[in-house]
Length: 118
Image: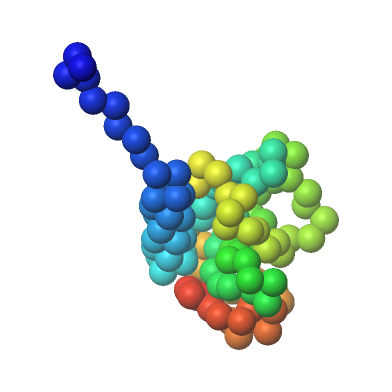
């Protein structure tokens, strides 16, 4: 034995840590009404986060208004539901939004549980 230690990381522990970080950051963004930017299925989105919850398909998701169209984002419908498991490289931006968008429902019936909302 040469004294070198190799560190093993449990992938589940890393995943849970990243997921907790994502929830924490999204709760901050919703509370402060900050725009967020992230990658999702190969596209880049800038959104106004309005609600994070657990839907009836047992998936955690972010309901958000599309604020800016960036690389590859579909702009036909401004409301999007993003699965948290597919969000990558989340960044809170310094830009704030001030109003609820048309069609926003703080008691969204597509959710079985709401974690954070405006």
